[in-house]
Length: 155
Image (spheres, rainbow, N blue to C red):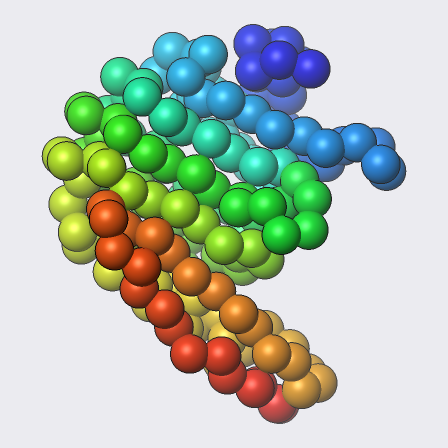
């Protein structure tokens, strides 16, 4: 399923998840800004890999998204690279990201939004699980790799 078809069928949905055994990858460069906004406007939970590479988009708003799981184990859930006009990334304060995210080469993006994403992961580590759990996570920013240490969380 291409990005256009996904946007047409799923805009306004609260949950987007593929059938078992199917990987859902969405390339946001195939959509205009309005379709991207419509797709994520009400989305609360998703299992997909989101790629935005070399787009003309100015903003990605994931403020209603609570859970974001990757399309397959080990794949980055977000891959946002080389978007010359992108200046804003908005995330829900309670967002749970279950996979690495790559965010680099976005010259207009305010580093404040990267800091918010790093802080989101720290908060999620503190409240995610009732049993002991190790949560590895990294974000690639520009040409550097910043690593958060693994933490074991118990409640």
